[in-house]
Length: 103
Image 1 (cartoon, rainbow, N blue to C red):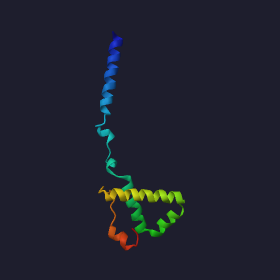
Image 2 (tube, one colour):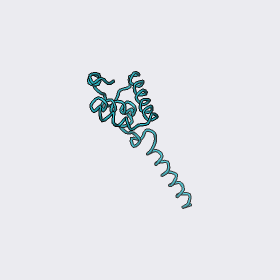
Image 3 (cartoon, helix red, strand yellow):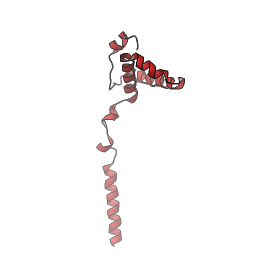
Image 4 (cartoon, one colour):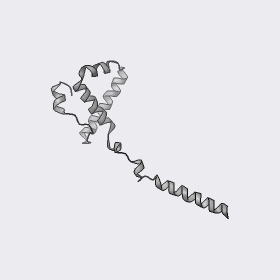
């Protein structure tokens, strides 16, 4: 009889723990979920390129062709998402970038 009660208690505890970590749980949500990593990276990279062009060129000079292509692909994906109207968490000043001769 005690064994049945113990098993029932364990089953109830397991059910409660499943409820605590359900899909609607606040524990599984983060403000970072709202940040698109491609847009964030692209905008940070473009800002670096506009504000510190020599440093950016130095960083890029150490990349292989494959790594530079991967970087370009991240920026292309962000551009596509930008065209679809997804907001960036780190918007850059388009005028500032244009005046420095980069885009």
